[in-house]
Image 1: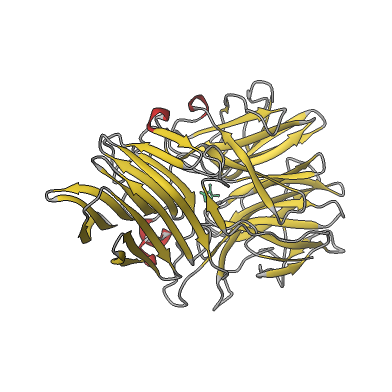
Image 2: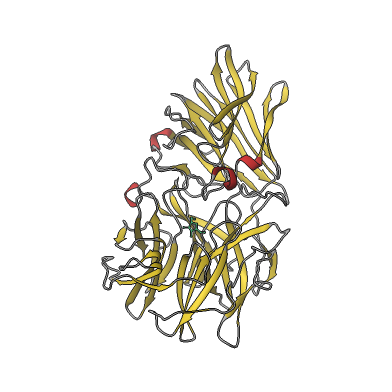
Length: 493
Ligand code: 6LW
């Protein structure tokens, strides 16, 4: 069947995939958001259903006061002997750890820490041995892909960390994953950095410790030379074989806006690219080593896209996310209303404001909710990080209730428009296209346009970091704001 990339849209970076019980499981990085590490299930590698998160308890991950794009970096998921493992880095505390579960739909263990530095850890299991691989420095201070053997029951190192590959020459060697295919060990990695020069590269060896020989045709996959082209940043991939024996790379990539001085606001998304093994044992990917929008793949499925999100078809514990560790008492989820109790923390702080968000999945969208306040301020935000976010809210002003549009960019806090209201309730609407977020208030007198903010300021290019825009409901001040009639609707692109 035909499928279209990205297969998962919106800020779901650094995908890693494994297969078990006839299904595929994928995890993504989550940085300052909680719960951490979104977990997806699929039967065809194209349609992915989020089934939960891996890090659901405070005891599993330290997120207090962490900077945006700190916290949970790239994870790897693997299954060995029926047990699932997810290994990742808390980049803020510089700790590598894994958690495990025997029930993919259940809770995961508390963290088991491994004393090897670097980021993007991976596990490779073979005949009762577990290898822990990350990119960083080895025991002798040599940088590259480092590997040690660990005791999977305790996380204790059984060997010292040894550098096994230094890449093929690109900067930022990251995302190492080890596979054994046809008796050879393949080490796949990313080089070039997670921006426009990103690539998937590989090396192979006849022993898990090397010596690793670089693929003479590296990079295996990159869109760095495709221009003008909307899909950029392809890299950080994981190799997976489907039930028909065909191979694929699930990688991150992003959809750039504008041809010159490009930017991207939806974050890094998930792309699927076919892989072919060559007679010489190396493999190549995509169309001439690039990822395209459309491919044919084997399987009897139809690619489904959810275009409308409401309180009725979303689950607060699966689809929605919080900033850092939320205070549960601030959130009440009723079937047709969310009551958000403000806690005095604003969206400008690296703490946990009362905030509940959905990743923005496509460019053309309408995000709306009816909001009722008693005091304080509550509304909707298009949120990139504490410095860059556009907010439309109801609040109590000097002369009574008002709607306000606030544009926050690079520390500049600008009130774009204020509309006096005669009631403490109104419907707030954000409509986005490829280049703008447009803001509206609906009252008894009709629809009022409060203004707009350019999409280019809610981007990784402006904010830095690794996340994408999250559309959220928020509340500030000692209030109980009532959100009803929530709907987020995407247009066909
Ligand atoms: C991640 C690194 C990268 O750990 O970005 O895409 C970092 N590459 O591999 C943050 O996602």
